[in-house]
Image (tube, rainbow, N blue to C red):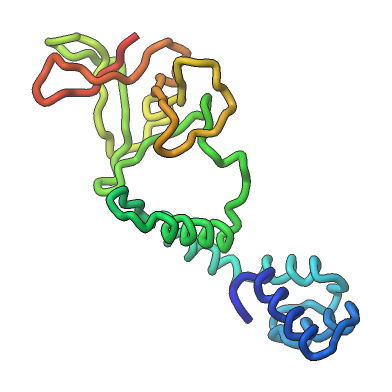
Length: 199
């Protein structure tokens, strides 16, 4: 059986149609006969019930976790002109891991954390200020995820709350998630430039 139940069911249906098995009841019984006895589908009477039973099996749950790991390791190289292949792989992984909830899209107004892939550290701010220069609140990379200091609100100049962020097109600002109107800015007080919090 192929890992994703819906893909597997569609292939079984196609096989049945090619072999003149067209009655829905017969196709369902044929599907059930092809499933390993360790997975109990005896009470399943529809394709949806078969699919749900397979999705609740430990094999598919483990498969989804492995795909999510692949998805986390997937990196986009802006220098690679073959971006269509990247999008296809990304969509395939999302489908196989069943990541299709639109609520998981980053939108204007979303509360996010930013994690540096190489070091595993989080973009963080705190109430301490630089002693020289702008003397504003400092921003740093923290090994620990702080619920109060590592959360940022995605914002913009215009009233676009709720609209999704589009890679390469959307202009965004990061605002502190403390009810204070303070934004992440790049300071030119130092060389090299440093991050700080400004109003």
